[in-house]
Length: 546
Image 1 (spheres, rainbow, N blue to C red):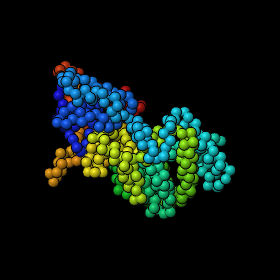
Image 2 (spheres, rainbow, N blue to C red):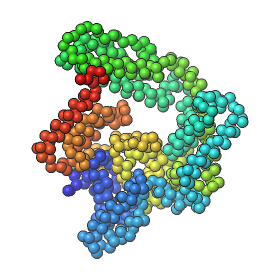
Image 3 (tube, rainbow, N blue to C red):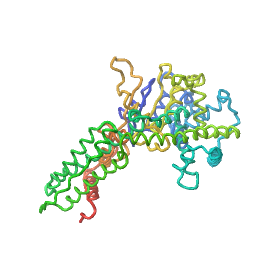
Image 4 (spheres, helix red, strand yellow):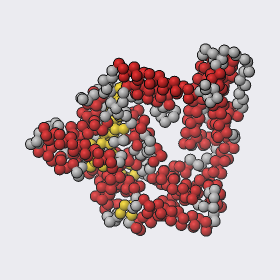
């Protein structure tokens, strides 16, 4: 089958930064391979494949990509067996940079180790060895702190070690260290996080990152509770619905709307402190369906519980009392930050003594080689980065939604953006980002998704060097499956939870891969109807089903 208009655009676009938002089943890998084949085989001066950097998420993905490119080149050679350029690509393929980010970093370190005064005989440490080394370093540090007997350290231990073991404290240090290493400048990141716990007034508390995130979360929960309230009112208005419950539900709606108007912690605290709920009416209604009555009761209980949980978790005290608690917690958290920084230093020394490096070192040593941190806080490419930028005509990044800021900084440093010639090709689907727990930052993808234009030219008629292309047609599933998936996701994906709006633009479009018969369509409709009935049945509270 031929390429769609959007796929062809992805294959042909050149000399710009391109973000491809590729939905599930949209032929992302096939298009990526075709783009590479086109670049190395067509035009007046096709490039060599070793002038491309292709970054994949796993070694298996890199191997598959290399195999598919090899097969595509072989197919081209069958059509033009005397093409010397294609013959050359076959020989270059095995040494081409089709690799994971860690393998790329290792290659950079091996070629430029002298730039950071690194012993070139280093070894990649085994995971078990690194785990044991971390434990030993933390144990030594904690032993020293116990001997010193600082009061704030003992307060920290009392607060976070709930047993005779120091394992909870070790876990905290390792978690904080892990988070810091996902930033290009770990010590600067810890300094920023440390500052969030220096709170002396209610005004300062408002400006902390976590307070802003808390208020976003609270508003998202309230929006969800309002939807439940609306659903309950809708059932009341149905035939045989419990209309007598409407007054109490309208009272709940007024409470939720009042809460939605709050903008600050103080406003929320004031509103949450005086909430009371009207009782549901005991009026007898003969025509009411029992299951509808129970469903409304269940939804209302969820609303009341949601409000009670928010009150108990976040608004159980005055803002002034919270500031006092934060000041007490802040002293303890400073100990955690000090311990983590000390661990970072000691762990690095221990690895240097044994001439070992781990996966975090691969990224951060490569960063040290490729990126200069300026006093202003900005960064710029080093001479080594500029050399690599001249080598790579384009940088292609697969599964871009799972990048973190270290990887983003690394790959940006070797691109040609610094000299006004953007040349990064980034493909992924933020809806498939599942590695936040491994410190991926889908926000990087989302920022470009919202900023990059879909047009070929800007409003002044100049070439758009930062372009987004959407691949939203699914060629993997039948239309009825996509309709059902879209129906579910448009209800559970919203900007307030996850930062994604599952609207018409984000929905999966049928790629017309199957030639469905009338019988198949009729069967699909029956199946879809049955599934919908089962879902509705599951929503009915227990005890009212028959």
